[in-house]
Image (cartoon, rainbow, N blue to C red; front, side, top):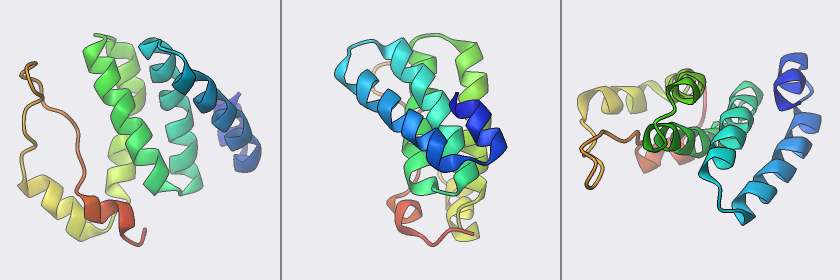
Length: 124
Protein backbone atom coordinates (compact mmCIF):
# COMPACT_ATOMS: atom_id res chain seq x y z
CA UNK A 1 0.00 0.00 0.00
CA UNK A 2 2.80 2.43 0.89
CA UNK A 3 4.38 1.90 -2.54
CA UNK A 4 1.16 2.85 -4.32
CA UNK A 5 0.58 5.88 -2.12
CA UNK A 6 4.23 6.91 -2.61
CA UNK A 7 3.80 6.90 -6.38
CA UNK A 8 0.57 8.87 -6.10
CA UNK A 9 2.27 11.47 -3.90
CA UNK A 10 -0.12 10.79 -1.03
CA UNK A 11 2.61 10.83 1.59
CA UNK A 12 0.43 11.48 4.65
CA UNK A 13 -1.74 8.45 3.91
CA UNK A 14 1.32 6.35 3.10
CA UNK A 15 3.00 7.33 6.36
CA UNK A 16 -0.16 6.46 8.30
CA UNK A 17 0.11 2.89 6.97
CA UNK A 18 3.89 2.92 7.34
CA UNK A 19 3.82 4.10 10.94
CA UNK A 20 1.35 1.39 11.87
CA UNK A 21 3.49 -1.25 10.13
CA UNK A 22 6.63 0.00 11.91
CA UNK A 23 4.89 -0.24 15.29
CA UNK A 24 3.81 -3.81 14.58
CA UNK A 25 7.23 -5.08 13.43
CA UNK A 26 9.14 -3.37 16.22
CA UNK A 27 7.13 -5.36 18.78
CA UNK A 28 7.70 -8.68 17.04
CA UNK A 29 10.93 -10.59 16.68
CA UNK A 30 10.91 -11.38 12.96
CA UNK A 31 13.82 -9.79 11.09
CA UNK A 32 12.38 -10.59 7.66
CA UNK A 33 9.19 -8.67 8.49
CA UNK A 34 11.25 -5.70 9.70
CA UNK A 35 13.23 -5.87 6.48
CA UNK A 36 10.06 -5.75 4.40
CA UNK A 37 8.62 -2.78 6.29
CA UNK A 38 11.91 -0.83 6.32
CA UNK A 39 12.26 -1.43 2.57
CA UNK A 40 8.79 -0.03 1.94
CA UNK A 41 8.63 2.88 4.37
CA UNK A 42 12.17 4.13 3.67
CA UNK A 43 11.54 4.88 -0.03
CA UNK A 44 8.30 6.64 0.87
CA UNK A 45 10.24 8.91 3.19
CA UNK A 46 12.91 9.55 0.55
CA UNK A 47 10.26 10.64 -1.95
CA UNK A 48 8.64 12.77 0.74
CA UNK A 49 12.00 14.38 1.50
CA UNK A 50 12.25 13.30 5.14
CA UNK A 51 15.75 11.92 4.72
CA UNK A 52 16.60 12.14 8.42
CA UNK A 53 14.12 9.34 9.07
CA UNK A 54 14.52 7.49 5.75
CA UNK A 55 18.27 6.94 5.99
CA UNK A 56 18.28 4.99 9.28
CA UNK A 57 15.44 2.74 8.05
CA UNK A 58 17.15 2.06 4.74
CA UNK A 59 20.50 1.44 6.44
CA UNK A 60 18.81 -1.14 8.66
CA UNK A 61 17.11 -2.69 5.61
CA UNK A 62 20.44 -3.04 3.80
CA UNK A 63 22.13 -4.58 6.85
CA UNK A 64 19.23 -6.97 7.46
CA UNK A 65 19.19 -8.03 3.82
CA UNK A 66 22.89 -8.87 4.09
CA UNK A 67 22.54 -10.63 7.45
CA UNK A 68 19.56 -12.67 6.20
CA UNK A 69 21.25 -13.34 2.84
CA UNK A 70 18.33 -11.88 0.89
CA UNK A 71 19.86 -10.26 -2.22
CA UNK A 72 16.49 -9.32 -3.72
CA UNK A 73 15.69 -7.24 -0.65
CA UNK A 74 19.13 -5.67 -0.87
CA UNK A 75 18.38 -4.64 -4.46
CA UNK A 76 15.17 -2.96 -3.29
CA UNK A 77 16.71 -0.98 -0.42
CA UNK A 78 20.23 -0.10 -1.60
CA UNK A 79 19.28 2.21 -4.51
CA UNK A 80 16.95 4.20 -2.27
CA UNK A 81 19.68 4.47 0.33
CA UNK A 82 22.11 5.70 -2.34
CA UNK A 83 19.55 8.28 -3.48
CA UNK A 84 19.04 9.46 0.09
CA UNK A 85 22.81 9.77 0.54
CA UNK A 86 23.08 11.68 -2.74
CA UNK A 87 20.49 14.18 -1.58
CA UNK A 88 22.63 15.07 1.44
CA UNK A 89 24.82 18.12 1.28
CA UNK A 90 27.76 17.75 -1.13
CA UNK A 91 30.30 18.02 1.70
CA UNK A 92 28.77 14.97 3.36
CA UNK A 93 28.90 13.02 0.09
CA UNK A 94 32.57 13.95 -0.28
CA UNK A 95 33.24 12.75 3.25
CA UNK A 96 31.51 9.46 2.46
CA UNK A 97 33.59 9.00 -0.67
CA UNK A 98 36.86 9.65 1.15
CA UNK A 99 36.28 7.41 4.18
CA UNK A 100 36.11 3.66 4.39
CA UNK A 101 33.58 2.28 6.86
CA UNK A 102 34.88 -0.23 9.40
CA UNK A 103 34.04 -3.89 8.85
CA UNK A 104 31.09 -5.27 10.77
CA UNK A 105 32.19 -7.07 13.90
CA UNK A 106 32.73 -10.73 13.19
CA UNK A 107 31.20 -10.90 9.73
CA UNK A 108 33.97 -9.25 7.71
CA UNK A 109 31.32 -7.47 5.61
CA UNK A 110 31.15 -3.72 5.29
CA UNK A 111 28.19 -1.95 6.90
CA UNK A 112 26.56 1.14 5.50
CA UNK A 113 27.04 4.22 7.64
CA UNK A 114 26.54 7.95 7.55
CA UNK A 115 28.31 10.61 9.60
CA UNK A 116 26.13 12.19 12.32
CA UNK A 117 26.37 15.57 10.56
CA UNK A 118 24.15 14.25 7.76
CA UNK A 119 21.26 13.63 10.13
CA UNK A 120 21.22 17.27 11.22
CA UNK A 121 22.29 18.86 7.93
CA UNK A 122 19.89 21.00 5.89
CA UNK A 123 18.72 18.93 2.92
CA UNK A 124 18.96 19.93 -0.70
